[in-house]
Image 1 (cartoon, rainbow over the protein chains, first blue to last red):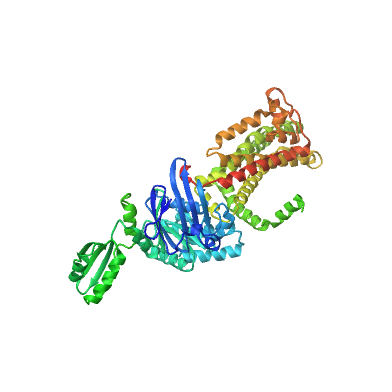
Image 2: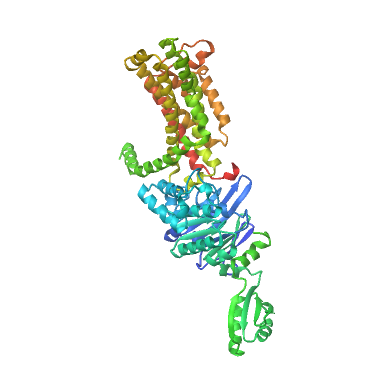
Length: 347
Length: 285
């Protein structure tokens, strides 16, 4: 059964899925070329015996950076493992750029996966670890050496590459796994908590790398607990809780769909008192609070579009001079708190 | 187009060159692990323990015993120790560890994240196990044979190079290869079927030991049934020992050679199906 609330909301099982996307129709149902450029999960469920991994997941992920957000045990890793064929769905179908994960010989020519498993084959050095992967691709020694050096340089691991991985710090092991995932120039990069264990400098560099890859037209699917960093780089987000997809789409659009929580908008203007008095008379405005510094108003409204229209009128009629107008809770963290935070207090 | 022609054309279209390179890559990674891992020391002991004993025998009993007696002793060592214990348990250690070891060390996913057909990966790992086991036990058998006849000086040399010695050595080495193929494939499949393949392996040992008392058609599903027939020196079977040495209804030599190979191929086909379904779930291990 499918009902429409605002842009699009699909009812899946007992959960509501907030789906916000620029595309008017679900691409899950679009045949042909479009599916060749998307990661598609159709009614996918995974059970580990009696334990639920994910349930009835429907997703169509376009290129760009996609953030996968959810508390521990929400199904993020299960979803990534399903996309890469490390586990098989109990029900449903997965397709990555039109390739089934049951065909690793095709899939991993185009996909790189940096898992969360912090383990390595015994005795390998950073270089041999990446080099071995490239040899498994069937590349000759010369090409493997070249690509291995290139990947190691890209993650800043050239210098310690000849040391054994067993002696690396957690951050270095994370980066060497990242090198292994990107060494063959994949078009889809799946990263499970890739920022774990990285120092602030390495984290900033990694974020920059992921964004650059996203700009190059790659699919970058990235799970992280660090919401503000995900917020900075994600083109779209998938929010998960207890094995269900709770929301998906561009974060602004997802936020718009969360009607239960009025939008918070911070306005800095020439006359905050006047603005507060004018907007408070409106039905859709729940709260208008003057900022502590006296130079702004925080408005909570159930209808952001109506509010922006009103604001335009006030500017013209009352000669209000606006300095900034910015949504105050239009980010991954807020959306996460609204949709999942009540169920899982910690992330 | 006939079915045979279709099959031939389909086979010709397969990326054999790529698969060969990938098998070689798996081999490079696995051989190092197989030969150099500390947990494999006991396999070296199994392979070379008879060499030590035969060497000691050669030093201590330099002047006693005849070549005929020692040939029978060597046949006994090969059939009772190598075939039933050494190669059996050695292959158990090597082949069950090929995938199970990677799962325990949480490194199997690195293979699964490469663009390698799971079947190609399985074959690569199997060949790696085969090279390891054949090298270790082949060298063990060769060294046992050499030490056994070395002490007889010129007579021993004559027996090996002008008598039946060389043929016996080649037969022992051939049986060693076939045993590694047969046992190896079985243990590889068991490791994909069971988290702890030790108990099923003990059942296999029981099966291999007691099939001689079963009907001959059932005996053909036993690896030692074929291998016993290929052993170059027969051991007089008396009492319970006959269970291990006598073949009630032997098949021809070619069939005996093909038997373990076909059996191994069938088990590997099953293993291919299992490895395609294999999931990475280290938490459950």
